[in-house]
Length: 460
Image (cartoon, rainbow, N blue to C red; front, top):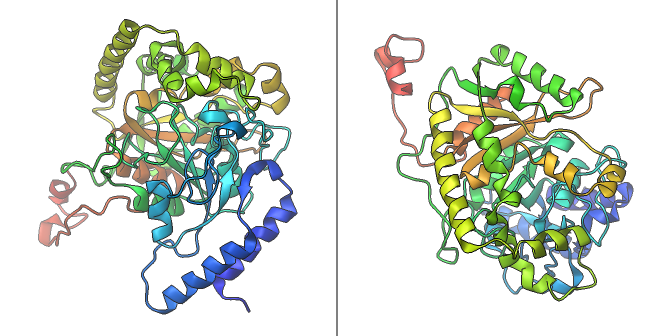
């Protein structure tokens, strides 16, 4: 019998051949190279190494550097081969993760559909007529097909959460800067987040935990603050949108969300409706406001050279982003500052905000015939999160009436990721995994024990 890690690698490559989804990968590593790393990993473990991610197989979105593998951002003419990996990837591999390869994406991480790539449209794992969701399409499908344990993507407008929703898997998007962006091709430098996709919350949290923490090479990276909250309330209360804020949902998704909300009490959670129109209005600034200029700053000059592999929709979006004036940009930043304050006020009496992740699951044909408006609609509930410096954990909700996946998000203010994970775990009926280890162990005795009169003093 093969040792366990090598066996997992063999199974992954067998699965790649079985599913025959070449559009998932832009660069797939040679099986023998990964097996050689698996052998070295097994030897390290036998020698007593402590590697919490030992043998976890990782698919990396191809706008994130992996040493020795080309980074294309789904544009062949843009390709370069980095000598060092992105900080997030270095942290994963240092803890025993094995990289399978680089995955397809909406070009330059611009899109929520997974069809905007010269390497082919990435098809949904369970129905090839449907979109996979983007822009982290290949990473999500590699996980959903049972090839990779962990998919690494990026999320600026919802790119890690929408494909998670379409495939019934988990997506974690942290606060801005909690995971460094060193070695990531920027889409909007101030609003990009490295994200994790996995089949379960435990695996996603374990991978995210390893990647967090500031670095001198990323001036936007941040550490957890000293007063970071480490747990949700014992009896959580969540906000949910009022009916008039859900009009963009398809009938099937509307029913699935209503069933998810109706089941909150059975999961030990109370809820109240709130108006989220201020958040939805802020979301429009990502593409309709001057903030879009960040996309031109990232790759606009390159796309101005009209490379043959440029996706026409992506090129049109990015090149048009050269237009906004500086004073409009300043005005939009002021609008976002006010919206950020409004969001914190809105959630001040709640542990988090429960939202549908996206609005519908379109076909590839529908998106190809209408590449802009459908994509725009899919980001209705995701676009505002990074603009307002909020974190989100996407998990499966109640299925649609025909049994297909439907996803929800727990959205929280910056640095409250552990709260979102706690709520997501409660929604999923599992024990909550720990993302942050900065707590202090406390021994409780007497009346402070759980179920006794003053236990609330500890939890408060």
